[in-house]
Length: 222
Length: 409
Ligand SMILES: Nc1ncnc2c1ncn2[C@@H]1O[C@H](COP(=O)(O)OP(=O)(O)OP(=O)(O)O)[C@@H](O)[C@H]1O
Ligand SMILES: [Mg+2]
Image 1: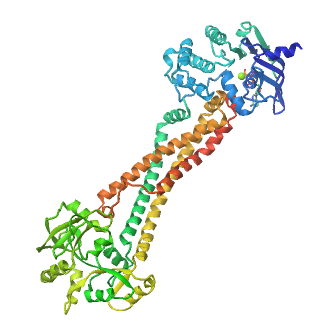
Image 2: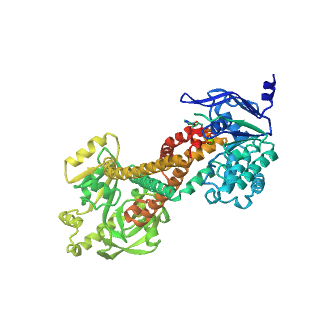
Image 3: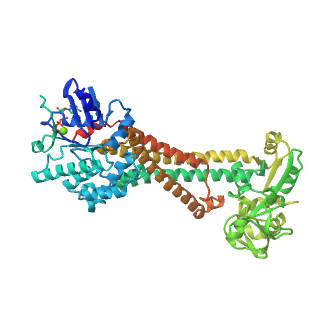
């Protein structure tokens, strides 16, 4: 079957996915696949379930019905500890609120990501990554001292530092003007492509509508 | 990066809060440590000085006073007893050995004890230099006396009347140091030992002059002036049979002018009296530790609230719930460890300082350069208290619902 073969090699595979909260259906996606290294957009108005879907893709919550597989592995079927470890190594997430750890420096945030995924420290990689994201001089800075744009790039760097196979970003452009919107999206796409990571961006920002080769439209929910 | 560095980073965010909790813990630990050191050393010292002495016999008065003056040489004696009475007791079939002591004077604040060579032998005190006294006005001095006064073999000194200080010098009867005893860690270290005859002779000729001073022990001397007026102050007794413990004290106390007191009984009573005071202080120390624990609990509880995004984010980055829990527990353990180390150091320091500054504590040989087994219990207690304080916050960290937390704000 065509469907099965598409699912097999996919980086992201969703089938029959439903998510209810308190009896209310929040999300309903029949089938959706993203091939490895591809870049896709989750587009929908506010309240359509984009963040909910990203959480399911990251294994942060469990679906009511259906399955989510990342890199061919069914997230719901994994033991909790294995899922945490898998997420740490294979999935990088850039949240809408960036959630940088304020007690640590910029470099410390990246080191923390490697440590928590039980990966060896990689100072040279961290330096290169900060360089690539225009953060070369900010390694020792505290998150509180960064500009909004810098903080967002640090969050992107942290999502990339473990070389994940899937990069998820939630509303990366909602607060940005057109010029910056383009720059951030270009940065995400360039960095994901350079590392061979699959990229999924969730947004209600229609400016991104035609930029991506693949798109999942989520309908508005009453 | 590791959990240790991460915990340190979080503690650095609120340095004053961390410092306050560490200091509270440290003061509590220091109080308890000092108490432990003090009571352990006091117990040790009381037991060591009284070891092998079953009974102290002296003049009527408070039995506690008799023990304190006769064994520990801290209180004034209850009075003197006739030598003849003491000799009669030495011949008692239940008595294995006796050591007579004659007190009354001091040299540079250290008590001069007229006695027999059995006395230093009882404490296994042998001369480190010179020899034991053989003739009257030869003196063999304890190690602490030698250290404090600087006297050496061949030096001369005069005794002063009374048991402390120099209120009336017996200039006409100088002593000569013939030996210095090796340090024993017992009461002997602080005594000047001489022949009983020395004490008798000083007071035979000194009597006329001292009447004006009217010291208690000399008044009693006068009362027994007729016939054989020779007196001693106390007799240390060792029993021949355990049965004597039941019969001998009753026999002595029941007849004649003598009084018998058992060191075991009186030191136990003393420890109970002191113990009540120590318990109060110990309770105070525990209260400090408890309030520090409460401080740690509140700080960590607030922290898990303030850091809920961090905690959720760390889960996203691959940390298992157990690891987040471990991080919170480690943070509490770091505070507890810092408080413990600081408290132990302060406790030992304060004890050492007391031993040096307070003459009474110095006499006891109080030192901070030692440890007591109970200190390990304190360390364990504080670590346990830290763990308990961190438990609820740690469980909260464990339970963080990532998706929900990150969805807010
Ligand atoms: N924990 C929750 N409890 C109850 N309702 C929830 C919860 N999480 C999400 N929802 C609801 O699910 C729906 C989808 O929410 P979600 O955050 O996924 O939307 P979204 O598309 O990301 O919207 P936005 O563009 O505003 O971020 C909303 O109606 C929201 O109220
Ligand atoms: Mg959203």
